[in-house]
Image 1 (cartoon, one colour):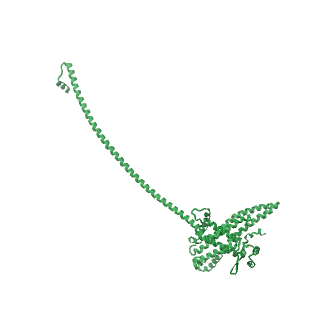
Image 2: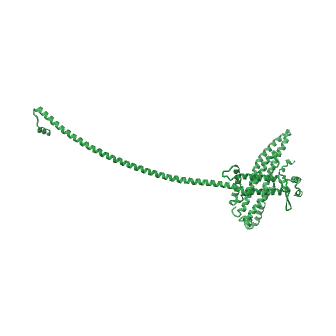
Length: 183
Length: 272
């Protein structure tokens, strides 16, 4: 490709001439007079962006992503650990509750047994008292009955002597009356 | 005439002419051209987006989420799965390739919409063979340097597949060497061809919109030209969507291939 005439003259005319020449030959991209400048500029821009990437963008963006992932995994681990702790505590609480319930049941049972024993003792005592009172009363009743029965005998003897006196005109002797009652 | 030449969009034009610098007798013209300007815009844009995304907050805002998504494309889907944990030092390089190619591709499509509003110097730097070739050679040299630094002369094991019977070794060495040396060519041509092809096809459909519309204005049977014009416009809309996909895909492919090539020399001799 003939590039000679364009090299020395960087004027507008040379450029349009290069353009026209490129047109005549097809794709303007194959005009090698334009290559060096583009390549150098591209390398400069690429290099600057690469340096920014290397020292600023990639560390910061990659760092943010890593920090986020670390935070998420850390948080999940924390949550898991707390959950495990809570589980352990819940189990301990359940065990404690069961023990407390057993203790409460034992205390209740003891109290019930004690109360029942007391009740039984009181009942026995009251029954003893009642039976003693009953015995005294029964004795009183027997005495009264005997007295009554004795009175009845006296009344009977008087009635019998009165009847005898009316019938025979003379009073019967107590010996006769006793003999008659003995028959 | 130049306006309906589909190749006119690839013409490098000076915006700020600078006198050429002489380096060892060779003139180096560092004038700011439309191509250079778009590269600068791409570089600034990439730095701006990633700079705003570099807040490092635990809870990302929108820009940070976008930056982290791009970072994820390179780090999580390319470098770590392909190279493994040895790949960390190469993340900045692959990320730079991906972001620069992606944004340069994208500028060509997004700003070309601006040309509808009379925005003059829309340009796609990745449609320049000079730029894709520079990037491809840069990648190739990086692989070469990493290969020799990490493996020394063991680098040449790359060209001898393990378990090869010895009579086959010279033949395979030559074949593998050629396939290695041809990489910068395939890398640069793939990106260049895809972008140029897409832009030329879009331009041709765009010129159909105009030319068939002019025929339509003629009236009579020529009114059918409006149908063709509308169909071409629909095609442009659809192709713009496709080109947005291509812009991402080609950047991704370039970054993925760079990662694969780096992996071969980083993990040379173990695994494959």
